[in-house]
Length: 440
Image (cartoon, one colour):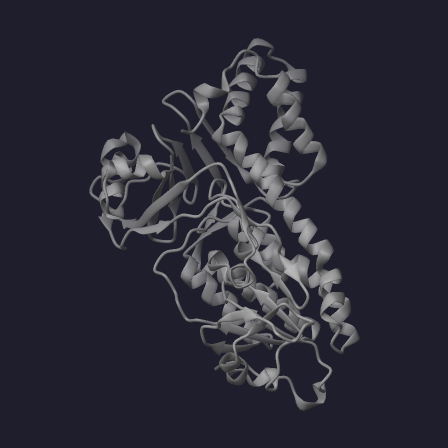
């Protein structure tokens, strides 16, 4: 166990929080609650997979990193990400930089090695006063009649900051393990896709793009990513489970065959050396139907994960932490232990805000999967060629800016931008068929 316990002067009425899971959501929440004066126990099961989805961050995350005093940590374990390029066919390629849309869009982001990035978050939480307990926790149904969820007795005894009692609030930050949902039999809404991702890291790769520029490319089935890290390249494929099965049984076989069949991936990796095993992730587009209750709340992926397309996962995790703290800060500052049902009511706005974020990202990502986004880009290019002049440039710039505001995370939930995309996808395609740009 590491971290410092609050002093005895904090008194027995200090709000006590147990956060189960030390990923980005749990660690960020530990940082922010500890700064508010809560007595925070951060349970860390110590499991650190070699690779984690979420290596590419969106620009809207950088201001959060600054608030957490963590941008230096991201710089130390990552590479500056100037923008994203979309390769949809031999003739349909769209590239942009975040700086182009500054100051509305934060001008850069980062690509990070996730295990090292997560460790930086944990270290900051401990430095800010969270008490880290190296233990895998089991969440169970509560039996006191007031709360719904409890820590297993062994975990309570292992956490000195809990003083031998159940915490005032339990936060499930266990990611897609969804421990609270499993303990309370809470179902999830599952999205329309049944995708699986396989990816690995490579060294000695060929790169003719700007340093740090992320490449997303449509494939015959699914799509691929290329994410330049500090000294490695993360290469992954995302495709339906049936299409994945056609590539082979084992993840390494599937990734190898996908690379061999893709001229762009093959050119990038010709002569490269694979330096990690192949990681596999599934269960995309999964959102819990209930995310809070008397004495507990879900954070980050435990609440919902929409899709790796556009890389919103880590941003959503940290924003969920900020939303929860915004709801709890008045409670923590007052001191004492509110009734579990009062806590649930206090958390209602944060749950609603996060649900709206998940909904907005799901809608935006849908434009890429069903082809409407790329069809709009193609139609826009044709329109500006046919009507050269300042008016066309202003209109195109306006549309591009609002797409960038959504895809960067800066204004994904913005009502105007979402309404603009809906209008354009119905009335501005100019005969361009979205089906021709859809991801199978």
